[in-house]
Amino acid sequence: QGLGRWEEAVTHHKKAIAMNPGYLKFYNLGIAYGKMGNYKEAIEAFQSSIRWKPDYAESYYNLGVAYYKLMHWPDAIENLKLAVQKHPNHARAHLALGLAYLAKGERILARKQYEILRELDPELAKKMK
Image 1: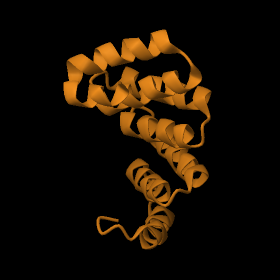
Image 2 (image 1 turned 90 degrees about the vertical axis):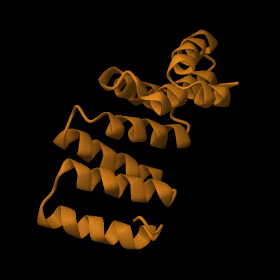
Image 3 (image 1 turned 45 degrees about the vertical axis):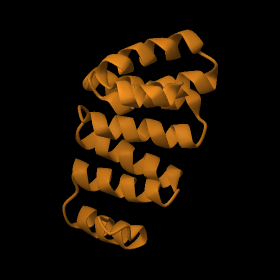
C-alpha cells in the first residue's frame, strides 16, 4: 500500500482479514479502495472497521469522505460529524465537514466549521475560502 500499488494492497488486505479480521485491516482496505476510486467498496470497508472499533475517528472521517466523493451529502455530514465528535481537534475532518455543508448549501454551518478550523490549522482553513 505504501508503494501505491492499490490493487495488490486490496488483495493482501482481504487475505489478512480472512485470516484474522480487525478494525485496522478493514480501515486499510477502505483506504486502498478509496485510492482506486472504488468508493462503494471503501464505504463497506470503513463500515466494517467501525463495527470492530466504534470509537475510531479516522474510520468515520474516511467514511464521510467516501460519501462526499459520491455526493451523498447527508451521509457525508453524518459521518464527518461523528469524526469530529470523537476527535474534536481533527482538522481535516472539520475541513471536510465544512466543504460538505457548503456543497449542501448550509453556509452558516460551513462558516462554523471554518472558524473551528481556523483555530486548529490556519493553513488548512484557507482551503475553505
